[in-house]
Image (tube, rainbow, N blue to C red; front, top):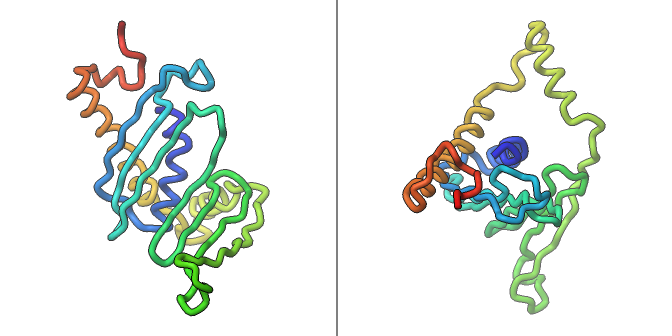
Length: 182
């Protein structure tokens, strides 16, 4: 749970910013029996489904995989966005070509790389805003509303998991993410 809480919140924040508040969230979390690294004692896989406006979405976090992959994909009828959450790779935006320019291809797209130069310190603007707010120098640039929405989504993902574990396995909800007793 700790890995998801530390990393997943950033993914959920970005999704909230890009597509709006996540609603009707349901999730599940499990601990794989052979996680990587092998000493993990917390859920290593977390899945969730949600609605944002008229869009439906799903998430998969696999902290047990020996292959590191940091990818957020948003696909819609007017195009797609591929980006890294924690890496420095430039985001890719793909849009369908107008039908008169597809040269007979059924689904032709044009992809552009978005120029997003990496920053030296991603936290500096936030820290600066908080310090300025405390000093009364500038108006509030960041509120806790987004953080609260993200925390509520994360809570709902784990609430769903607890309900499933209790219903199916008769497990004690306080032992979420631990190995089953043998």
